[in-house]
Structure formats: C-alpha cells, structure tokens
Image (cartoon, rainbow, N blue to C red; front, side, top):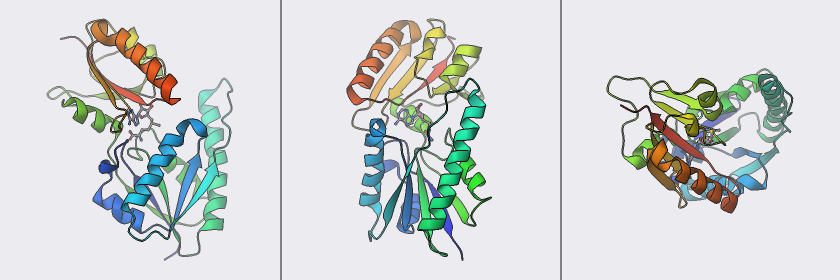
Length: 247
Ligand SMILES: C[S@@+](CC[C@H](N)C(=O)[O-])C[C@H]1O[C@@H](n2cnc3c(N)ncnc32)[C@H](O)[C@@H]1O
C-alpha cells in the first residue's frame, strides 16, 4: 500500500460546493496538512476546519499546520516563486515522512480546484523526489464556476474561447475577447474601454458575497470603492471577474 495523499478541491467558498467524491476522500484521511498563511487568511483556515467538521463522519483526523516559508521579494518573480516552492517542498517532505505512517493517508485541501492558480500539485511533484507516496486529485468548484453561476451567465460566447488570466497580465496585454481575471489586487479592469462588460464577484459562495455587473464605465468606480471598503473591513479579499469587449 504505502503512503497516500489526496489533493482535495473543496470549492471556492460555499461548503455546499464540496462534492460527494471529496467527502469520501475527507473521510479516508488521517492527517490534513495545512499551510499557515497568517492572521489575514484565518477566515479561510476556519472554513477548511468547518468543512472537515461538517463532512467527516468519524472524526479521528488531525491537522498539521505547516508554517509558510517567507517568499523573497527579489526582482525576478519566477525565480522568487521557484525558491519559495523548493522551500515548501522540503518542508512538506519532512512533514509527510514524520506525520504519516508507512500506510498512512494524508490530504491537502485546495481552495476551489487544485488545477487552477494553485501550487499544491507542482510542489507535490517536487516532494515526490524526496519521499515515497502515491496521490490522487479530487476536482472542485472553482471561483470561475461560482462567479458564472451566481451571475447566471454562460462563461463563453457561442463557439468562442475564454482566457483565464491575472490582473497583471490584463494590464500588460489589454483585453482581446472574453477573459476571466483572477489574482488582481488593483482593479485592473480599469485599463479596459468604458463599454467593456464586467461581471464581478467577491467572497463568492460565502455570507459576505458581493456581486456587481454592468459596463466598466457604469460600474467600475463603484466596484473599486466597494472592493476597498470590503478589504479594509475583512483584512483580505478574493475577487474574480469576467470581461467581454463591447459588441
Ligand atoms: C490562488 S487563486 C486560487 C483559485 C482556486 N484554486 C479556484 O479554483 O478558484 C486565488 C484567486 O481565486 C479567486 N477566488 C478564489 N475564491 C474566490 C471567491 N470565493 N470569490 C471570488 N474570487 C475567488 C480570486 O481571484 C483569488 O485571487
């Protein structure tokens, strides 16, 4: 048998997004490895614990918190991220070896789906060079799906592609066709022409959810103000939006 790790997508905010397959994997897990990202994201840690408390039938599991190594702020972004992933991989390898018995089952809970802007799978690939284990991946509801469901809209135009990108890349490259923007701390939609349509969502799937739709000209300033206020109130914010160029 040997050690096994489930990488479980838990959905992007609403505990009801947890799938039947994820519930089975949660119940199969003895040790949950969690990255401690500090106070600001403590609401998110609480949600993970709430999911475990709600769905695990016989609670014999443990949480092992892994301190997140410091990310260097050097000029080369890719190099800084690579160093950070390597430091995490060493930490995870040591924790898996120390905390899981030879046939133990552990899990990493990934926000949304593990394939989308999440480093868990990349880091685990590096961990595999240091400790022996098998792993599987349980898909989850992403922020993209939560956004389109809550706005009740299709993701793509008929037969059209959709780009999933970051705020930084939107600022650098502009908008060409439909795009979902994630990881944007700067309301980068403001670089788009005023006729651009936007469907914006923050804290999707949670009790604090915020939704705004319109054109960038009509609602851009309102979103920026709402976002700043909510971020100040909670200490953190996660928002995602879909953009479509004017017809
Ligand atoms: C590190 S990525 C993780 C994405 C995640 N793996 C997923 O499948 O949605 C974090 C970004 O996802 C988006 N996001 C995640 N959860 C969200 C939520 N509940 N509401 C709005 N945006 C969210 C935000 O753009 C945030 O900056």
